[in-house]
Image 1 (cartoon, rainbow, N blue to C red):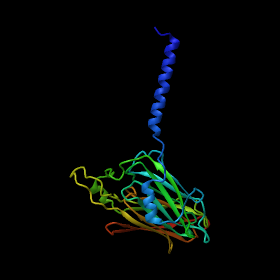
Image 2: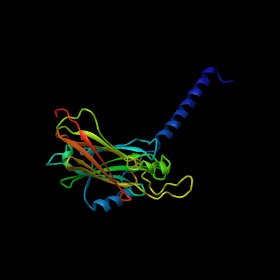
Image 3: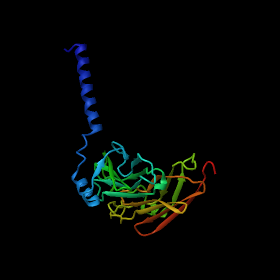
Length: 277
């Protein structure tokens, strides 16, 4: 018969074994090499033989290690340089290697924004690299990337019944965060109620695929000047949500214009109150 000391040692070893096993399940395998075949093809198609510098000195991207919901994966793109007349980020490409359509969005940003940060939510169909490529006004290209573990997001059923979702189609919110000061970059957010059907989702009643219908463009105007143009794909999650920056001048309003793939347009205007007006 085993002694009490021996039994304690066996239980301890079993505990360590199970702990290491379940820890490995939680963390998964190491990410694959970031120079994937999909990225090589995408890079050639979008940028030709232009040099792209992998560096977080100009742009960075944040995403969850393992997404809770593959249909709503938060993505935060952060610029590391200010938008100045001499040097600014002109475009940001949001790319998803293994999605059916890898170009999730292309954001054209005015130097007047002050900062070129973009936050949004995306669908991921497979474990994949998500990339942000910044194109500067000089033509330089910088990239940051994250490997995200999530799958099935593009084909996941919509969160609401199709009729309910379409009944709310185009309802919008446009808002700013508190503490807005003249001359200092301030964060704002546009949200639009839209099912963003991908064409890969099945109606659970009819068992037929729902035809694609999604937001394909959002334009943001700061007073009379265009601040941001977002060319989007169905990789953007249901009810598209984008956070961005603008620089208040004192007499401000923001206007958001949304165009979907059926060429239906929605619009929202917001007057901005700044400290020091």
